[in-house]
Amino acid sequence: MEKSTDTSLYLRISEQDKAALEQLYDRYEKILFSFLYKMLEDRELAEEALQEVFIKIWRGKGVYDESKGKFTSWLFRMAQNTAIDLIRKRKKPTVPIEEAAQMASNDTPVDVQVEWQEKQEQIETAVQRLSTEQQKMIDLFYFKGHTHETIADMCDIPLGTVKSRIRLALKKLKTSLHGMQERGAYDD
Amino acid sequence: MTNVDCDRLVDYLNGTLSEDEIEQFEEHVKTCTECQEIVEATGELPYLADPVEPPADMKARILSNVFEEKPEQNNPPAALNPAMSPIPLHRKKSKPNIWRPLIAAVLLASLLGNAYAFLQLSDQDDAPETAIESIELQPSEAFAGTATAEMIQEEGSLNLVVQANQLAELDAGQVYQVWLIKDDQPIPAGAFSPNPNGEGASYYQLEENLSEWDTIAITLEPETGNELPEGEIVMSAGI
Ligand SMILES: [Zn+2]
Image (tube, rainbow over all chains, first blue to last red; front, side):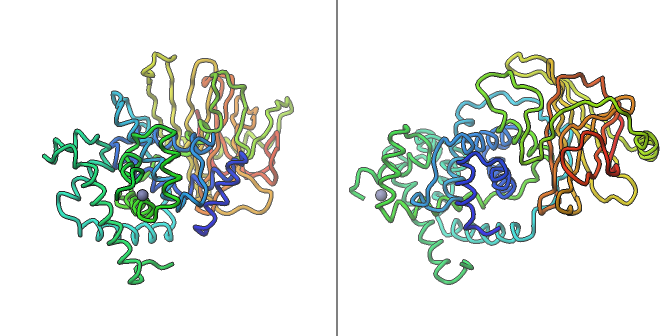
């Protein structure tokens, strides 16, 4: 279960290998569901988005190759875009199926948990180094999926500078993350 | 930052570009280190999410929908996911004698523990009414696993989704086989083998009614494709 096999799994999926899709699903179900839940704040919508992501992967909508960077970045971006689509045409909430059949699923494997925790600590530290306004913008832009107009309103900044401020915030985030990587916070 | 393409980064991440524009931008990213690094850093943001436990039966639902996704909603029955060990649906009239006492014993021990949930959902698109019954299977003695079956009755077809946890590893060739039983006559209704986390799931679609079955059981079969159970019942429940 090395990270490097994401790409080979993806290749097998592009050849319609169902077992490969299932493996990929198992590997990313929990982080994707948690991420989508953070964005959508609704378990049923999160499931809908997750299903949409895997339908896209299965049907080869949006093609990944290593020139596009890390597989997880590509996967998460697809999930994030899918969630944004749902947010922008948000439907009336329906009766969540899982409320009728709620059952705690198995614990996530320890290595996945540890990796998540490490990454969470890193990204949290990096985000905390941003100004409050920058943190708010990343939340509104990335997790809440708001348009530039809404962000301009909410943060009370001119529409024309929203994009450049978001870019600046992301750039600072990147620099902090790199700093941590160079200090060996990353184990690879 | 005079590059026009760099300006599109935020729109790209915000999902507001057209498909052509996305392609253009992805070409740009290949040659622009800064955009590349920002895109990668953004890819770490999802880890900010706090872990949320997904519904246990979500996997079976999603995978069945992904694999069965077709333009028309006229799926043949028993179209299965090979990753979950498809078993062709053949009915046999022969009646195994071992079946009745085993089930009776397991059921007797577990009848009171059956969790039932029944609800009516109507789809927002005025789809036909869907009935869902969720059944917790009871493990037989000395079996540590747990399983939930969800029977989703849609017009004309019955979808059976089974999700199991805490399963022991299997020997090569072995498989957990799901059976639907009516009057001691079992038919195979999906099979699965556990992943390294001890989880397994199966999905099965039948053109029959929920009311036609009285028992659901899972056996540990020595091989896949058995049309009648050979192995022991590890979990079961009345329907
Ligand atoms: Zn650029």
